[in-house]
Image (cartoon, rainbow, N blue to C red; front, side, top):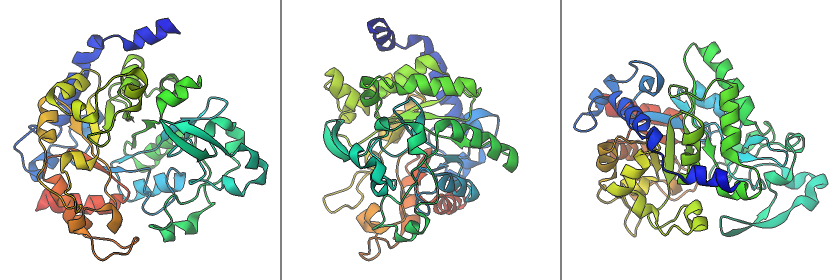
Length: 390
């Protein structure tokens, strides 16, 4: 085990060139990295294969079309495709007790399934420390896949999306392998390549349980022939070392997710690395990421910070700096409801009412981001059309 750890902790020089070339190819899909209008960028999309076939800005269905259906269900994934999403984020990947990868927002499933109503699992409710936070509920690693398949998904944020509760109990928890098969089926039925964007969720947590996520992801991708540079699967993680591990195992495009500037990736906390996200978004930090990944997924606040009142301020140099080292940016997350929008784009105070989301999209697109995660893919596509044709 120590030998394996040291292998993954070694430098990634062998693949630096491949990642740099991939990043350049992705950016090339939209024309030059900087200085082009939205119209010019989108006009370059669709040429060639692989990631280059995707439109820019790319509209990514966040956990499917989670603004309209309970997240991480085939109902949500299917609707995202029906609404025209360029990519579906099919899979926040966590592990079961018997080592299967399933798609849930978190390993704790009390808020996303009906497990609380299953008396046979009442004794599974427990408190654990998840990335430093004491969390009470039911956890996927305490269930076999067969047991999880008896549960059904529910809406995670019913206060903001009461209409989504209509679909509570309709869909089961999908496995990652089922998603890979679904991707192939949908590609055949729709006559176009369907893309997915899975995430390794809390990989350090699961590694300490002996349930390594990266090896399981790689095994399934290889099994289904989707571990190549031009495969329609982009893999992401909030833990840079998880992406470094995957860079050793597969050739897929990879992305490092970045939370708030003052936060520390949990793998850094565990290893004693003192750096924060603020360090990772410096030019030095971005150059390092470009050595093993082709993109980043920053929170939108890293692109345009907000002031104390929640209003947008001046954009940072993150887009320019990331592009300068060949990285693409797919920030997260655009949502239509008031509470999730910058204060300057809210309309009223109702928690489930829509604000001026089109206005917010235009401001973010104008920074030069290469795509965005959104719970409402149809809104994102209309916003992109406005931006490209404006």
